[in-house]
Image (tube, rainbow, N blue to C red; front, side, top):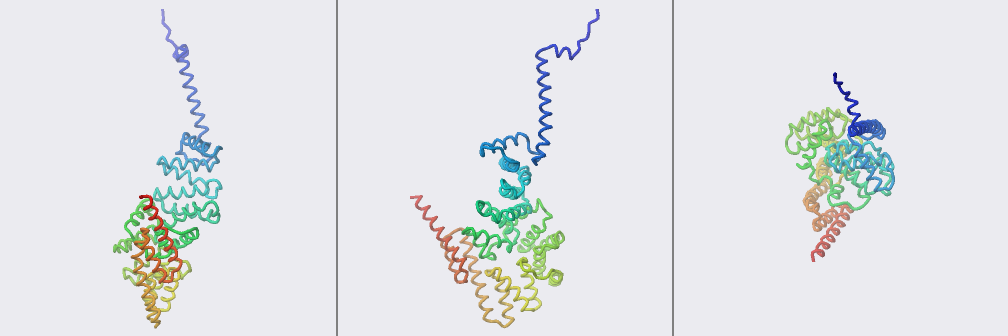
Length: 408
């Protein structure tokens, strides 16, 4: 008698256990497919990056509901995702989420803009960090009520980026805005009132610059700043190579042009210096201080003392505590026969050089050093600087007294 071969489907179906197993497998597959078809279009419509998982979205929604007792708007969800992802170390994905929120968004734009800048700094993306901060200040700078703390954070971030790139004239604008909101800490006070007395070509600053350059080697401003550091360190050939590369990348940038002129001036390549300056645009109010300084030096080289004096006067109106500007103008005045003005400016330059040492101690918030700096500022007829330094000295004394009382 011939034995029939069993049908595999019938055998599987004939077992209740296997039948239930088959049912669960089919149901799970249908569920996963349905989730997939639902999740990706939904995520894309809401601007959620593909690297974000459904579980991470659900967690962010739950966190928002617990905090706010309502459902999040799209921008609020993206912001919560960015914060959650950053805490878990997924900074690149967090940045992608934060950048999806328009800075003008009334619920989350300000916070998202700040987070974007902070994430960019963590990822060493200096240019994108600056763009984010500038966007925040353009959109929210006039809405000071209720967002003072966030605007202060934005300006302090921008001050850091501008300091790192030696863009002191732009930094001065932000420091003045910060001072309107209240007394600044000692270091920022020094940057505001004595920008030229700051140690600005330090190894630590250059190390940070190089970290930024590793991510964006084609950023002409960063490259120019690195070249200026190398020039100060005596590596003139490497500085020349880098600044010429930066000028090729962005020939229209006045800051890059100024650095190229400085490099040739310091190398005593006077033919190259004069040729580059001759091809440069005419003087424009608000141009980088270094570019104006190079115009003043060119006047001195050509013994055009009235022209040199005019440019140095512009510079001293912008920064009256720069010893180099004082010395340059003193020389021009001497050649023009203005002997009394020459002596006055030379004496001022000496007092400023002494003040540089005092301010180095004042950065540490030592009340005695701050008070000594305030006294020198009064002698130099800088009343606002003297007042701020005195307030900082008093604040430092109160802080020290409070610590002493706590120890008792």
